Length: 556
Image 1 (cartoon, rainbow, N blue to C red):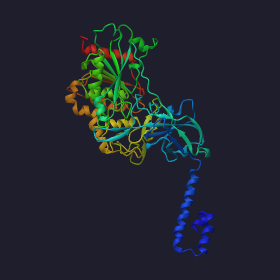
Image 2: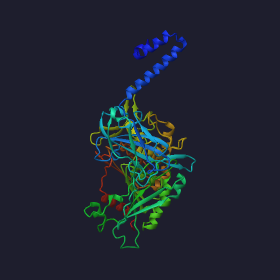
Image 3: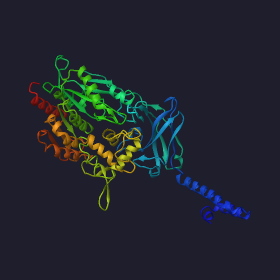
Image 4: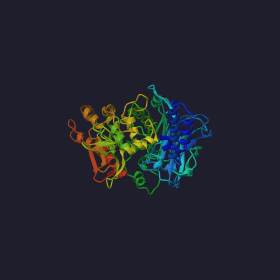
């Protein structure tokens, strides 16, 4: 009766089998076979018209098998290449890992592949779209801790699969999505991204790039770090003069410090090249890792000894080639966001090596608010749990209206589509790589599951004991405090897009109560300022730093 109701065309077959005295014990097997065929047919009917993209690469890209991640990008316009439209609030894309893929073999991206911002293919509105594939190559790293990892090797682009040299991409095609003609689209990633062109040295701007022995030993591959140096007015005319240095921490960039350029109409150019402007050598550092465009400038179990590499290898090389004053009091720090955290952290962890920091809108100085997540009190990173209800945790808000832009779950899904095992190159993944322990598989042990949001309290405790800067200072103030008097200055908007102002509040609560000694630094807030707010122009900030040096070292 069941087959008769569900699949009428099979009813006559069953009747035939009964009439011909088919053994009763075989009938259940036959029914099962027929039902299996029914459900297969039903499944085909459901997925009919959904896209199935087969993506391959030719031998011209690599004659050897590759391991990596394949991306499919879907856009509504091709005014900009689809791959360059991917971002936090960007266009639709999907990603899938592959191992030992040979030239000509294909990777499948289909209805079951996770995407962002729309998670499932069948939720994309039917219509015509532009599509492009990108192949991101992974490199095998045999780390000195005994773990073997497959990750993307930065090619001096700043850990960005969309533009990394050696990665390959396909031509742009226009296809129908969720329509019958969209099934079985073939794409070939045959265009290789060329090497990065490092800007040429000028009178004002110089570049350094060195192989780090410390990091290369840790990763089992050659790892490079570097710097862009901005020389002061009069540097060439005064060959015997040495200068204090400003280290500006930030995301990876080959641009000159403080966005200096040779445009005479640029306001900072006018300041920097004018007579009487404070004379500093300014430096931005490049230290990308297989996890991110920036290492966070400290020693970690997942990234390796980047703190030591910068302090023991890179900065000595800068001071050797250029006339920096090689003393702690003459090395000042600044930077915003990631650079805000770094400038504050290295001043705290290396209090004698640096002479003071002016840290702008820093990443979490206290882990009671990590882009909305309280890693100590929350049980789940995706929502706040109250007595009778749950509320989604907000990751990003509009700095003007306060409206939610992204939830924590959305932000984490974006990173998961960018890469599994923490290989997204995203903000939350690098925090886990920097702040967290190594997992059993050699990749970092995550603070929480990116699929469910469940927080691991043991990992939260590791974060606290090793990189919660407020907790570190509270625990070690009697020994480290005397070395930091007057050196800690923080600037932040109270409407920070990512709630980073709360970590600053927690730090201020502790530091302003310190005694024996008092920290004697400063906290400055923009009442309606968002992420990126600062009270000074770059020229004004340098004058503030210069005044501090003249006060603490009158002989300068």
